[in-house]
Length: 360
Image (tube, rainbow, N blue to C red; front, side, top):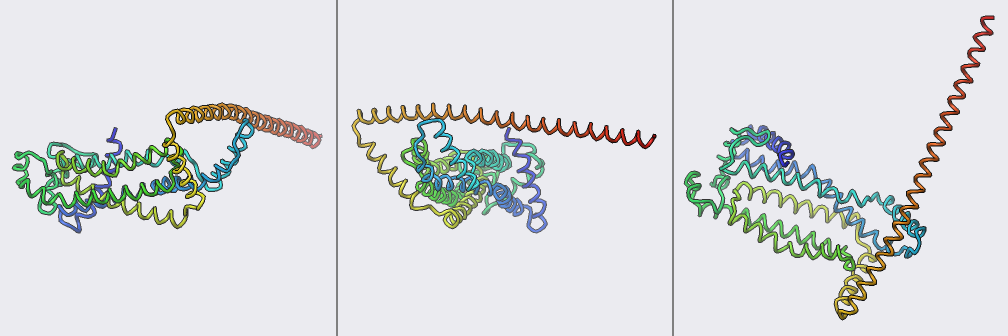
């Protein structure tokens, strides 16, 4: 499945190598190709990243206006609220569904990018990779970074080190700076993203609250995972260098997006007040006795059930209204077609009459 994304990514890398090997030696050209590959692929999907970040910020800015809408007790009131929300979305050119698409699109692209570099650097992999031929793969594996072959990895067996003619201690010494920088970029990026999420999280919502808690857990977990993989797994130096490049790009893009959000979509006092109130409400809820918590949860569940019933009824009314509108349009179109046909027949009769008079 990943081969679908391996082919375009490998094609971009091969193109950059063909262009750069005229200006650099063969080994440097491959290293430059990794950098340019990351820049190209990540730049192409950078607009999706920005759209996703912007959608999240617009959603937070609209939250106070949505909260100010009256509580719907009938399907008609619910539909009126929904019409008001749709008007808000249209005003800000915001689509909640489309805001979820960028991560789904970017994930397979990231996997394809990672797979190309990983396969090319693995000494045990033979053959072509997408558009990159087996000979070019061998040339890639001869590349040195700081005096170490890029297929080498920190935990590789002594037999592999002998085949690559490299000292395992040297591999560790040269790989650690790239690894530490890659992890540092990742941690900084996670901290910025988590802070941005904190400013817009509604702690009264179980889903958003749990997502924020998950982000907090990932801050120490991701660095530990990357360190463990690099120190104990078959992660070549080429992949560590790739981590360095892509995490540096991600951090740079995150900073640019954060500056753009602060300038174009600054958070209002209403958003900050709602967040503070949600934190206070959540803390007070945690202090409640177990019995009161159960009562609160039961009341919330009953209220959500009632809202869901009202929503279903409103949806039925909206669908019926749409069917009526479609039928009215079809009837109007049919009437117009009938009128046009009648006019054509009438014009044809007039034309035949004129021809007959001319003949007489």
